[in-house]
Image (cartoon, rainbow over all chains, first blue to last red; front, side, top):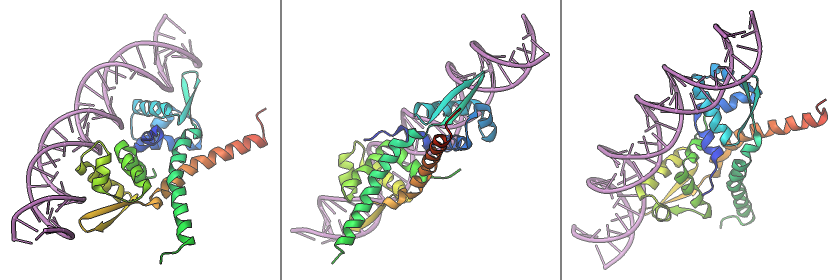
Length: 101
Length: 101
DNA sequence: CGTTAAGGTCAGTCATGACTTACGGTAAGT
DNA sequence: ACTTACCGTAAGTCATGACTGACCTTAACG
């Protein structure tokens, strides 16, 4: 079984919100927590999971920690999805060449 | 927050194995259960979740139920991923046009 | 019809993990 | 040095959900 830790990391709704909040650009932990309905430690823990999954990067600025999205972390997941996607396309192509009798 | 039930459905490891086992072609529940380290009821429940997420289809054959992959169920997830992917590409393109001073 | 094969559903158990409060550590401001 | 802002970690609580065994239904086969 392929292990896609990016997938399990993004499965949690609030963690996905953290990830999506980073789309507009890097943010410190406090700013993230203020936008979300959970406490700051919770956000910290989510960021750790995302970081371990290679989905975000951290850059310290004094006591602030700027977190940013790391799109390459999605590569494996994308490739896995394309596996099924391409298969569907080839099946469709085969069906087009020899239509059902 | 975008709700991607396909993502949460595929987050579970054994459920992902069920889904992957269907890549070779449609299979009845029993055949799936025999290949996996869980009981048949467990597989049934996983198939229900996958079905609710639009990831598999069911076709009855007597008392047998043939389950097959439904690739369109992955469309929303793929589109969501491409959101971040394209953003990364455009950022890279922008950085190429105006390199950091 | 009885029997067997195939599979969905129920009820209950158990572990994983998301969350909070409390605490400790570090950097900047006065 | 004291204080304040910012953040990570520890410990503990609680709910979600994955799994199993038992039960029931439906269809094919003798």
